[in-house]
Length: 222
Length: 406
Image (cartoon, rainbow over all chains, first blue to last red; front, side):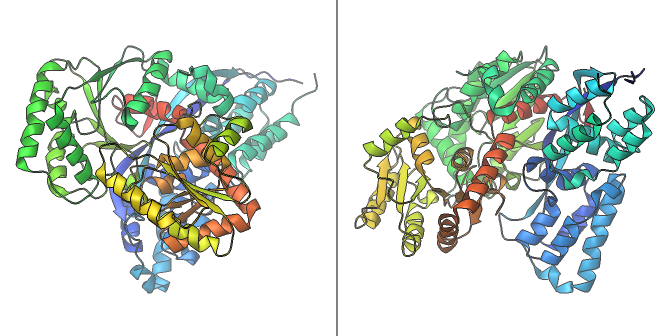
């Protein structure tokens, strides 16, 4: 049976602009200091930009911190630890920041010599802040079939917003898709299936395909 | 001039839909660009493409010029060089020349825009009009690599920069400690321009024939002005190191400015260095975009071994053609190439030679990185992304928060 929601789902698009902070780190000690001080929008930028900008690459993309620590400072063990931080476990930027800070601190305690590594000029870490603009699109849907059709053509930025940003940055308890499917369509199972995906291990296009696959199974034959 | 619809097959309809959504939010705002020249140079090239597209999207956009005499432009050229960190310094007399012309422009140029968008140092002093009359917002767009500027010149400019509402730089390393907001907006390439559009194979073959280049061995190419900062001698040395193991040929293509005695000297040195090797092709192509496009498309590996770069859009041009690119880790290049993901970065001649060999010996790997590179450019360095960023920049002047609901 095709369930029609009372409250429709409105797709938003989210667009980023990068704001420079002028803060730079050449060593792990400096990186650590700024990791503690910079606005949450900086932590968000450096843990999520890579994912989006390089979304056509293989899954499990590293974040900017991991990339810089491994490739520039050549501290590959720490880089691996930072790359494998399970972002999906964190419900807000504050706790994600604490985890990153603790990972670097623990590593420096065990490997104090790592403090001596420094990046050359032109290779410093530059802290950047993500300014996000949320704009409602013209797509409003009432049932799963319509939802699925829009999912096929909406920008990757929109999927990105509803899956990642709404949860982590706006501190909603789950992603927007699961929230609507459960509260307005009453399909708790499907909602859980979607929130159970680890979106960080898919490329964004694969994530779109995976969502469509899961949802299509639930669409009643017409 | 391409219409906005023409970009849909390249970036997808949803990206263009987003541009329209943002443009709606700018209804009623008048954007006024001001720079110093309508033709020639990167800024004019971008504005010539950008202004009609913004208008087509419904954003009321105008473009005005400042005036200046020969002496003024000599000073601004010097200013440009020392901001790039080149040797020398501006004198007090230079700065007085700069101020004389600026005062005249302040009197004569009307700044009627809701947003006044000033490009580069030449018109920077117009900001002294801010607050007099219209309550408008001011942006300074810096197209120069100011990661390591000469201090006197930067201190002089800084007095003006701090009066703006926001500044825009092309790469993170160009950011300064400033009391105003600073944004990162990279330049872009136009995929429909002569330099980047798809070409039929016959055109490519005809260009190779014209320059007597036979495709019997892999082609390595650097497209650049004959300028020391582009290190053409270093490219030849890297090629020679490769040639010991892999038979290949090298194309160095580019122009020299007529008023640049240094360029002629560099070209002579390059010719001297290359003279015993028939596999080195030195081509002078002043402003021939189709030929540059064809040569890039005919290449097996593209090189950009610069010592200093404002941004290095030749890297984006190479990647957009899905070519494996080896380039120096400087300026805006690392934004375009993530090492081993979308190309290879190098720090030396030996490093460049090693990476070129890797690409020649592993065509599959080269192909994969080239394809990744093309997608990276599609996502981040095409004119459509540039339009989006500029429109968001305009909106951000009215929204100081990090998460903006529109």
